[in-house]
Image (cartoon, rainbow, N blue to C red; front, side):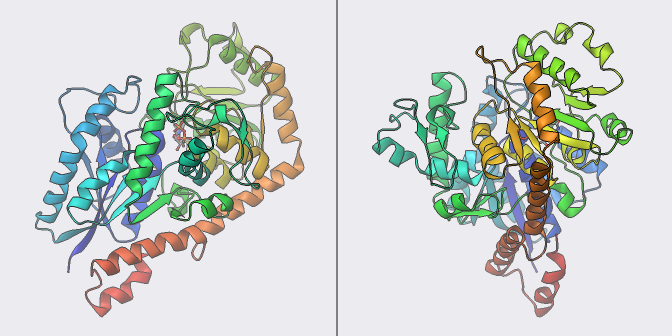
Length: 477
Ligand code: UDP
């Protein structure tokens, strides 16, 4: 009998590695061998996380070698140079890998290649070799549906051919989807004009590349954004993909996690802590804004756990307001990276002050937390409007006329959020929706199960009646 083997290729960025690693671990649980392709740097951290967690040999971690001796792929290289080199080397490496797995003598056969939508063009390698292809979209289905609408936006004169809006105006995908300003499209909120055009090209390339894929998945659920799935019926939700669904730890972290924050949380009262984090790559705050945020947390008079990445602001040494660290020492914990999924499920956490990256959105929603939304970049504005306007489980901040969110605004919104019983109840209901969807019989669970069954059946992995009978036992998440 042959072993079903799946090759998974994430884009080498934190927000992409986390859900694709989670998908890989679910595939392992469903009886597949998985080869997960990393950059050299990511390889090191993930290998040690997997060793720590005793993942076993069903998950095989490989890296892509290329020119440079050292790298910081997907982490600190803002130029994107090393990521570009990784991507250049990837097609050849993928082809070699597939050949190695097939010829490895272990009886493995490739059931599918799963790649990140953003590098969907890699699927050409699998197509050429006659292997089933799946793409995984790491943002929301609504973001995807908006990307699909691009040709119409151009023909309607809302966008120029290069993706820049012809003018600033509001746009609504469907009457049930919140309107969005053209200046907040996920490709127009990414930096200067050159960057906007670059991201727009990636989106167009991504959409084209995955048209031929056999499956297109995302880390969401029908119940969270049903209207988007009606616009993009090819998109199959299999989320929220969280380590807690399989009672395990998240293994995709690219930074060392500061575990002291969990002990600190243990010492706080239930539902008392503001958790503050802006994901892995959100643009630095300017000095003034960073200080207002610190002073807002101080003014709120609540315990807080704040993730301040080393590159969060210029001149970290004098980043904090004078005396701030001493004044908040007994109720504030500042760390540079946490095991976020664990933090969000901790009973001491009362709310999530978030940049609204899609993974953070799914993780906060799955834990029934109310959000304070501070979107900065790309799709975070769309996600924020779902949190605040559709699910109604969060509040946004209003900046002043100089575009700074002031300390009083932060304090007021914390009080308003935590004093709103209805909002907290809606957040708890959203948690129920999320957990029902990944539970046996739920929509995302069933979608994932159909995928794995289909792969096994297509490739004839059920060679015997015994194999068929075993399937229901190996498929439980
Ligand atoms: N994350 C983490 N520790 C932190 C902050 C973030 O493990 O201190 C994880 C978080 O759980 C999420 C990912 O990093 O899975 C960030 O992805 P998201 O889409 O929220 O934001 P991005 O980093 O892509 O902007």
